[in-house]
Length: 109
Length: 112
Image (cartoon, rainbow over all chains, first blue to last red; front, top):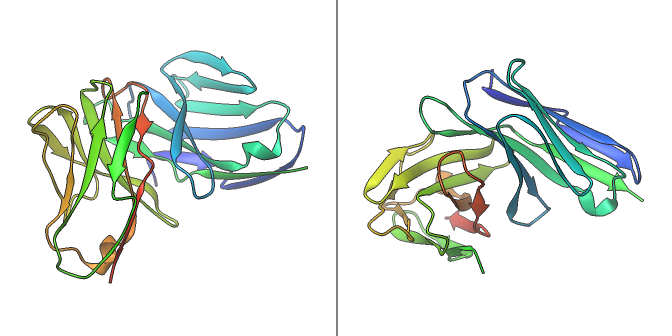
């Protein structure tokens, strides 16, 4: 069992739909990252959060420390949101960064 | 412009021929790390460094070496590359281990 698990692995949506990607972790962490990787492209940091909720444009990230769970929401999804979304958490004890396997999102017009 | 620069971006080499992938950041970040990304396995950490002269193994360090002689540079060294090191490699930096991550553009390495 991975220490950081994401769901779903693959997600397709119609333009305009509300999207949720989930991330659960079993290790103690100091923060959680949400990353975005476009096909053939580099990796961009979307959010880094240790509590509560952050919003940037149409993207919202939440984290519940007690439940060891984080969600990434995309409102009014657009084809340009098509990418792989990855959550990652630094282990509290070792400073190693542990990654989820990613969620491949495709948004169709 | 704040950035993490990796070189080379693409490299095809042969088994056993030593190579170095350079990584440089201009943000005065203390934390730097290397990852490899393989289909079906996602991103895995190879080595990381909390500061100059401080390096630690990640989850897949075998076959790799690193050094951190200066704050801005964190080269990844493959002393004797093998085909199972064919992968997409990313370097990243942040202010601390829990800070926002800045990634390089990636280096696609093929070992024949």
